[in-house]
Length: 305
Image 1 (cartoon, rainbow, N blue to C red):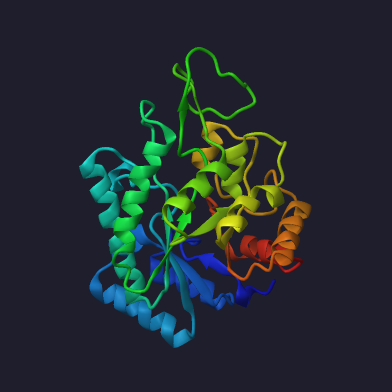
Image 2: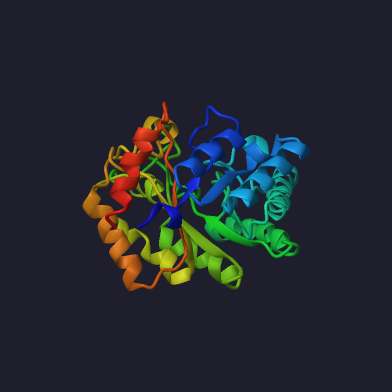
């Protein structure tokens, strides 16, 4: 895969201002950049205009505006919340990101599903809240498509006593234990409720969070998303197996460092080819000390696929 066909998170050089980071990536040959909605919201009107003009002048496209860089923090709200204020805040933030996408002549926003920790409410009722939020957003998108990013584990199931299956991933280490819902069930359920009005993004690193063990393959994990309308694939590695510390601090590692091997990614790309995937592939890695040399090492791997 050529660099010119690959999108990348414009926040890779996160120590630089958004415009400077974007320019550095453009100088490396990237023609498609995804921007963090949180970072864009704090820019002045003139800074946003300058960013748009710079992209246009260089013939570079904004591939997407991601409503958050990783997980939606509580301060931004929660699309699946039962509290009205929290849900309204999240909807307002996504709508603001749609406006930013329009300003950058971008046709796509990527939206994290939100966090649901309401143990007393069943899975279907939680999804009712989420679907209601998304439907409100879809009522006025100004022509911008909405892509849902399922961060596995955003749904919980309560039970009493010890976990019924120690191999399953849990993040709450005190009673009541909670386990994540099956991805295939969640993705299909949301797609059905929204009547195929949205499409999906698949994040490789988050799959380790979803499964928490070595008994899975990337090419198997992506199938539920392909079946429901896959539009974006995020490339990143994860130390694996999952634990709470690694998830929070090293979620999106470089492709050459972590649990997934070159063969894992090659098998994923092979499946995408057989399924005629024509969506976006985005490199989304986070490094403590990002560098052009490290980025080039990632690109050499991707060129093999």
